[in-house]
Length: 580
Image (cartoon, rainbow, N blue to C red; front, top):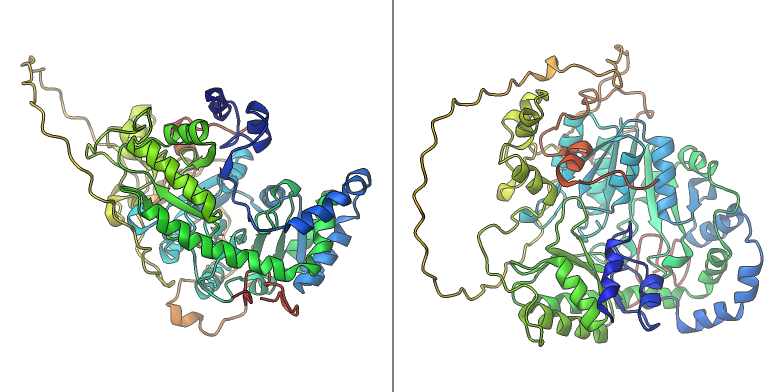
């Protein structure tokens, strides 16, 4: 593949150019795709042949209404249609969730799917990003996340399960407890776009629980599971009021004829679909083992159809990506543009073994210099390798000479107010971002973090003696930045002080045992936040505001085995997988 193809990465607003663009710029054949997280085993060849035979009718005529297509999908899922809204891909549904249901602020762990950070920022919302720590394998601690939300006064919380790009998984009971602990928020979103690839639990989805709660939406993907990203279709599940509010805003023909055709085909191909999920899970285990054998490459446990890997010390992901593409016709996802990640990380989609062997061979040649061009990353460790995996935090510390947010305020000369909690934060595990103390939600065991294999060190070189320099005159010590207490923070006009309400206070985070007998959820949007909205520019313990991240790394605004009742289908969340 010619070298100029890699220039497409610098000319696209997305993380990678489309497969169509790569094909046009090459000799007409696209690369082996380890970038787009698609099911490689579904649809079956016979299904593609059937669609090809119907192509003329599919692209000539209007589709049925979204209500008709949704009713057919709900018949297969055995979900009430009034609780479901289908969209032109999950991105369309995320857009409407933001416009209709996110009033002022949204919390999300990072790194994660970029639309959960970018979409609210594009509409002027405050995005409170909770950094996942590399030292704990990017595992999400729900207790710390819940306390972070309370400290920020955030009104909407998002969880991706499994998370993209690391594949981190949360058990159903923990997610349900989190939903109930956040019953006073405007909204809780559980993004289950990759959950059907999980096998850590028989019934991991919370779709049934979401329909019974007033402020919970579960987002599901169809394109990823069915291997049809190009069709653009997904759905959400919520109580009838929430689902109906989103559904009422969707265009009449937001679903295309391909989506309709596939949905009406599914009931005849449940066994093939179940087998495809089973094969992806087997391939994931095999692929993880093969990649883990490469020296210095760290592979994180995943329940998605992808693996998150850390390159050896000194490796630059963009160089590895470009050389894999030009020299080996392999497309990978380099994660340097994901908030909370860096260019040292790749997300690799699970593919059949023959493709994985090709990937491993390419990585060996690019990383360790077994090709004529030599190693792309020959540098040895310098003691400055990432320890947290949170690139936005690293950039913040670097550009303020270690002073963090306090240094930003001093450099700006504006005296940015900081809450007392931020002036002496508790440091998280591994020396990463500060994290709040654990609350009453269950605390999962940290995900195992594979250790890097030791690399041979070069022979010591003579160190040149430094040339004496004149000693500068002593400078007066800088004055400390004034740090007002939280009660002294001025409230900007955009966040007026709320008038006292007779509504009860937000429910405290009780021990896990308290969630054994679920209590009725309170009515939505009637309980004020525990601490009130936090003014823009004021960080809480454990996170950065969106403005701070953009201000420190150059980010800018983006341009404007049976589904229930069935005999052979896996259910809406990969439950009861029948395929052995």
